[in-house]
View 1 (tube, helix red, strand yellow):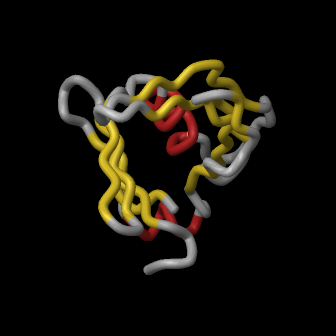
View 2 (cartoon, rainbow, N blue to C red):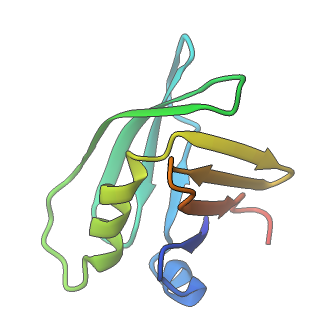
Amino acid sequence: MLVSFDQFPKQELIENKAGINLTGEKINTEVKGSATMGCNKIFFTTEFKNNGKLKISNLGSTEMACQNMNLENTFIKKFGNMIHYKIEGHRLTLSDKNGNEMKFIAADWD
């Protein structure tokens, strides 16, 4: 579950069931992932490296028109720029080169 991102309040993230899924097919060091921000299905490939570096590629989504796509559009714009990761217990933090962060918590943990 996405619990902290940009200017979006946590309640809006919860209402949109914002989150990523990193349990997709694994090929070598890459994992096929997916995300939802309330409307379209977002898909991507991730590679988590031992040194806290992250590579996100093949980012795309379905193209349904929805009433409020601000969260989704902002997520797609910024997610591909995330290049660092940190795991602390059930928490995952992604960050870009400017220190902007996306914070996630395991869906079965609050």
